[in-house]
Length: 270
Image (cartoon, one colour):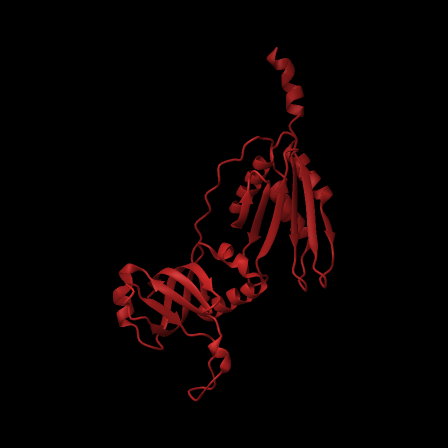
């Protein structure tokens, strides 16, 4: 008897190729580079809850080294973000899901930005084209441990400052847990009275006439400051002003009031 019902039940489960085909067929684009281009697609997987859909897409994003900025399994909402590169700033991707099995994905580019519709469609459909039925979210995938990002102090300060001007609320979630190996010039070390030593990197402003006239902009330029790990006291005591240094640390916060990017648990790199 069991065998008689096997084929009909299997037919109720959409194949991966069928879901991927939906994604490609439903892909649309609107807008233009001047107003900002937007890309959308949607699939429906009968028998899949909102939580299961969001959980699967979340894990697909983690597998692509994307940051999870926001996630609500019950509400069926997710915000993933492509990491920044030399070609583009971070790109947030919004995902919604409901208990009918419908999952919608959208991506909006900034004004003046250009995107390849074919590449964006491929990326979106690789993420939601293999969704499967289910009532509960799958266990959260472990994020691959990335290597520290090598960057100059000036580059890191300017990058975060520019993004904070665009939307300061997203900076903490965007950079949370990121590790950096920062290169630059030592602008000074705290005296350690608080029990911690802080190393501040020189900014990029410089003087109008080096050594003679300070630029007014230097009063408001963003700098990178590292809170040294407890075992780095000896390193702190040997630093001198204007030394070229490298420190590896983890993003802690961006202090808009003091114009400071804070890293924690920093260690010197020889």
